[in-house]
Length: 245
Image (cartoon, rainbow, N blue to C red; front, side):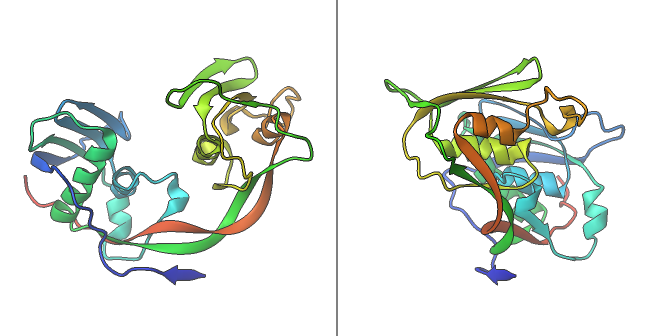
């Protein structure tokens, strides 16, 4: 059941905007999907359809966080990919989040994008503390959270340094499991921890050495439990072919 929060397009105040922006339909064959790169005031997005553009602009955690209503031409839009090359008006370098704010303005102006946010009850995994105490310690010293991902025997290694549990939740819900993940651990500190898991496309039922995300969390003294929870989603109400460059 959906609880509607707003019926208007989301508008975010921006310190800068794109001074110039080239928007072109990606020419086949499609070798690159969701290719992102930036340098100084310039950003390039290659191979983005409407769904990928909305996910980038609103920094969504997965397809589950977006819904497209049945607006005219919806299905046709999903099959069209675009290349965007844009430059900030202030000539300065920007973070990806700052470029996302500019992209929201570009989508509203050139693609007539209109969205709203809703809360939707959906299947999730709740990350909780298991029967035994967590098998990791709080970080010592100061510094920014860092996550190192590497390939190891049996899957991939995820090493977190000086990170909150929210980063583990974000990583899990970003593709390691088949549902969004919500934090119900009650752990509020910064931690050093590491786990190894096999990605879904690497996991084979006959391989007993494969480490599932559920087993990886259990090894840390945590637990993933299937449940439901209200989650915020972005609903796309309108999206049109972009205006000419």
